[in-house]
Length: 325
Image (cartoon, rainbow, N blue to C red):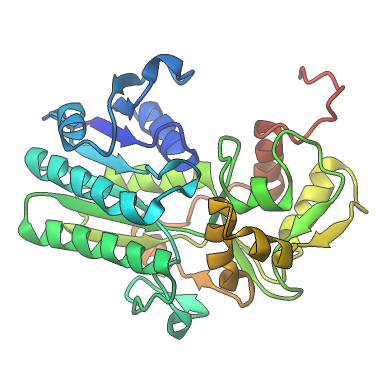
């Protein structure tokens, strides 16, 4: 086994890509599995391997000799999410057990029900109320069982809604603004006065790699990040206005009724509607356990993070503007 060798599943996604980049910076050798690696315009330092996360043989071959498997893969467009997610995880668990590797999973708040709100610590009960939440609970149950068997280790880092320069499938770039266009308005999903938690992906990746490189983690380790807490729903929209230099940019409510009508026909709308409850009341992960271990949580200033995100998704400049620095 190569001590600092990692396989990243989902390296072309927001979380997987951010972790892969941070691992490279820390001197890791990084491999990535992709069904069509010849079409990937990724970091040349990553060893792209042809394969499918749904194939146990492909994952096992790609993971040979690694000490870390980053499981950040999701079905494209959330299609068939409920039938594909657990088999993909089982393949990762089998490969990790074969190598004695640690699995790194980006966690979500979906596992928790209202009985755990509003402030959620790592040991809060996971009584999910949604289909996706119950699947997420089962994912973590299987990971815990793998760690208990003693042939693999697990690290779960849970954070709020992701945003970042390489993150496309999230509330920021598909809800608040539209990727590829300078916004003429901000669409905000939350109710006025209700807090919401965000997580800048480079900060998430920083925390993950710091934890992965420690030798004092338990076999099944879970940590929560606070990230960027927006206490009343105006902090994020205010940052977008400031970065764009448009203090009066209109803010519109999310068209939940239209999305509900589209949900039976559009998989993405269906998945977003299932998570709508997270915008109706404050849900906040607490990071006391994380900071007790690593010190102050890495946190990029919000305006800086928003500027990098808008630039990365093509929404900072007008379409006709010269984008050179």
